[in-house]
Image (cartoon, rainbow, N blue to C red; front, side, top):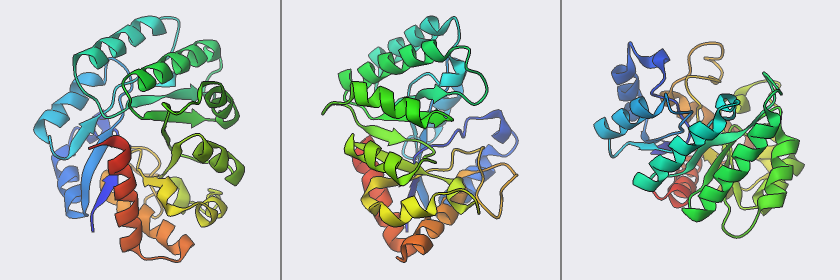
Length: 255
């Protein structure tokens, strides 16, 4: 079996002491590809260094995380735009709306969202969306921007079945991570009803580790735990989850 982790911050400083060992565990667990979302200008160097070291396993995205959107966000977006004009990336992201920590720059986040959605259309790339405490706002923005050229993934999906159906109708897949293993995660009704072809696997490592590792640093080798939980909920085999989610991720990200 082979898996794809569609969202992992493996360049994080949290892996600085054992990154190589962590990646060995990951590849041994059957995770054949790791897709790396960008955060802002400070994360680019480490992300591209990993791509250079593991060109067949690690693939970079380019975007501006909503938590990095502030009064100087236009300068950060210029850096993103410059990178997009220089070379190929597999997606625009991680971008989106985050209203968990601070709502001060909500208007700027919305503007950055629209600009990056425009780049996704321009470069025919999937959009990888962060939506913490902002599902309603993200869906509203997408409804304004949606057309046949906009598609992607709702990263770390934690919404309702109705939310899922709206996103799927707008050509978006659901990124399912460690939250699916949490007792009160609320994802079982969604996983049960949504077709497997609409799901992709992710860890969001080093964040949101699945049970039984919850509360510790997450890592990409835990992808099979997430896949097994989906298999259990849907009453299908782990092999089927691995095969279908990998097929969907490969088609979506073209990697």
